[in-house]
Length: 232
Image 1 (cartoon, rainbow, N blue to C red):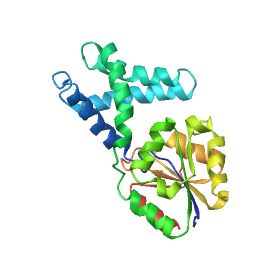
Image 2 (cartoon, helix red, strand yellow):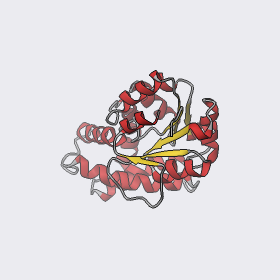
Image 3 (cartoon, one colour):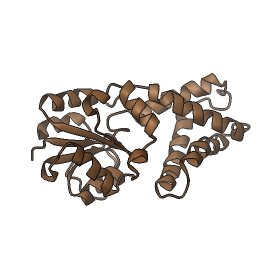
Image 4 (spheres, rainbow, N blue to C red):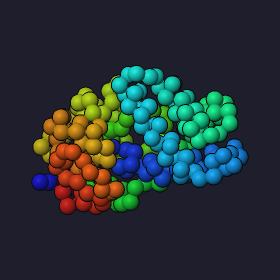
């Protein structure tokens, strides 16, 4: 099967969220002299990531507000890690994390090479991501991804629907005049990206560099974005 239209997820599909977040958190720990309590930033990040994922699921289900999500994810994690006064440090980390994260620019391996290849081949591309509008736009611009997507960026906060809701897929595919049979969704989250695309009725490439097991059958699955060059 050959494709002319591509829908991309952002975090951990093109923009290396985990690497950038680890670096960001290490900066914050050092900035606030908390290495005594948080000697291993990677361990703290793992705790934060687990808490953040649970809270994001609650936010997407409408169970908590965006403001609560931003506030409590660091309070909970700092308390869990044994840092004194987590209620004081939590809001500080939460605010500065959102300010610092968009300045991080590391992309996943071969992301830029792939986008340049697809662009040269005349493929149409759109980006759809669950996240905070201001943060996501800055990440896209600062990392140089904006030149490939221009006005074809669809962020859940702005659209009003989170992946896997079909309406965010509809908005993205409409922006590139895509035909479903010739459109491929590329993402690293099986539930939001892959199952969302399956329900919407387009093929999927499950970017799975860690080789995580999945219950389901994506159209394609791989560990290297360069696989997509063979599908054009």
